Image (cartoon, rainbow, N blue to C red; front, top):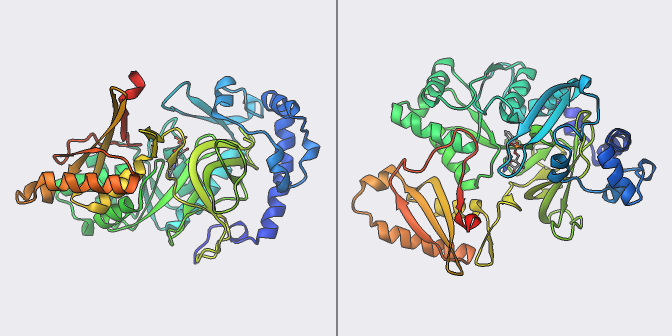
Amino acid sequence: MQYWNPTFECMSRDEMTKVQSERLIDTVKRVFHNVPHFRDKMQKIGIEPGDIKSVEDLKKLPFTYKQDLRDTYPFGMFAVPMSEIVRIHASSGTTGKQTVVGYTRKDIDTWAEVMARAIVYAGADKNSIIQVAYGYGLFTGGLGAHYGAERIGASVIPASGGNTKRQIQMMKDFGTTHLACTPSYALYMAEEMEAMGIKKEELKLKAGIFGAEPWSENMRKEIEEKLGIMAIDIYGLSEVIGPGVACECQYKCGMHISEDHFIPEIIDPETEEVLPPGSTGELVFTTITKEGLPLIRYRTRDISSLNYEKCECGRTFVRMNKVTGRTDDMLIIRGVNVFPSQIESVLLEVGYTAPHYLLIVDRVGKLDTLEVWVEMTQDMFSDKVRNIEDIERKLRKEIELTLGISAKVKLVEPRTIERSEGKAKRVIDRRKNL
Ligand code: DLL
């Protein structure tokens, strides 16, 4: 097994708890002294740095919300003077002001370290050619993957998103071995490749490091099949550092969290109670090495669960299961909680359709309606014998059985749903305008 940093990746739980405790104590002190907004929060609940003696005391600390970053926009939560900040990124966010994050030189170094680990999980080394097709710019995907790939000494192609035909041509001509982009963009590339008449056998591609949006196991199968690669899931968010907070190893059974830098918790989003290992709830992260923007108990809104069992790869980092959705992406349709990824799973399970879909939620009178538009596969489209209505009925039945809600399913022609070069947009909720 190839590791990037076995000292930390394979550390015993006791040692990890010790490292985390020391780093947490130090972080809390720094935040208390340097971030007035957080100091106020601590003082309001009567907590001071001396009360935090180990990771056990984490639960005594107040949460940090996206709203805190908005209230102190743009730099109010930074814990160092601007002269120490060497990079700024921002996450656009679908609602409200963008969230601004700042990195010191050491933070950039930490980020490259955790990304290097992730890229090695995908089997890459200094002989690899890594095409980074995440967007470069304020989005953390491009530069995050770039620095990690350089750190391991691989040859990096900073392709950024878009320009898909040229992207594929480079992949072929340069012999790209690893691709980093969103899973929806990977699929789009596979489709373009077919249109260009390039076969997967003509590429040297071995693995892909895909993330930045939720994707189902069925979508993974589809990508692996179409590109002839191993597809692993990578997770991260700008506020915590960017991509590389967690990543799957080759066993693809949950994403190893770089626990020497980020402490995860799972809480009940309503009661804010910490839940026991294995429970599903909202992921909360505390950064324990960051300087620019250290965050205490940051509420991610992402839904997942933690798995502390031993992984076959030998790494001891806890694993987070695939993110099923966000508490704020959850659709409530006629009182039933629905995540787009659940519908994706059903669609791909039944077959006949391509993984390009759009959910349209509306309200007619007092009743919520859900319409699922999904593209037929090219095969099905050309095969006139198949009865479209039969398949629509089958999908409708399966959605109702699995999710307990009725939906109208509409099969649309291949390539009619808009493709994405970054994060895919899967939902149009017209109720928001009512
Ligand atoms: O998306 C960072 C990133 C870039 C991660 C490239 C992985 C690869 P933000 O734009 O701040 O940062 O968005 C963060 O995206 O809270 C999740 O809701 C979602 N997300 C990120 N990775 C995954 C994933 C980047 N693997 C938000 N599965 C997070 C599901 C993901 N959702």
